[in-house]
Image (cartoon, rainbow, N blue to C red; front, side):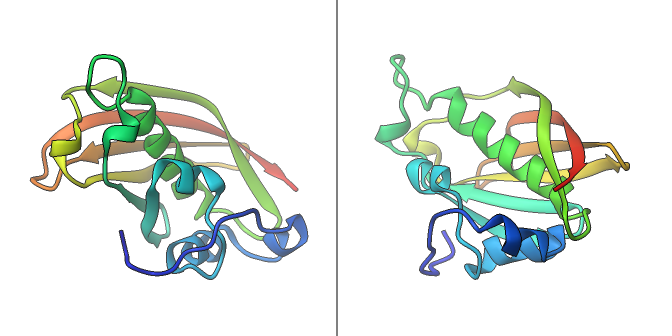
Length: 158
């Protein structure tokens, strides 16, 4: 998506705790922090990260198809889970983490390989000490809304 040579893996817990959430997510976007292996499996990339907002892009292909011949909804759901959760992560200080408690996804239009590049944008709605909420939108390159969702994340030390 961005053309940068990305690496995949998991940053050590010690290295992760030494970074703010925004530093971590910007590192994912720039390639200085390895992307998770799910990003490699599904073929997505984090293309933008700022405080309270993260954008992920993917190119749907035949490997994403469900038995009906359209892209499996799990691709869009994963993109939303990632962009919304990472948007919340951008708001957190050093040594603070988060995890998804709940996600709701609404599918509006079918996605196919012919759809072209899809973009998932997550934006924080509220980030408190224990709970964060965010919304996300998956759009095509013409700006049409394909899928949208919301998440609730638990915020914790460690």
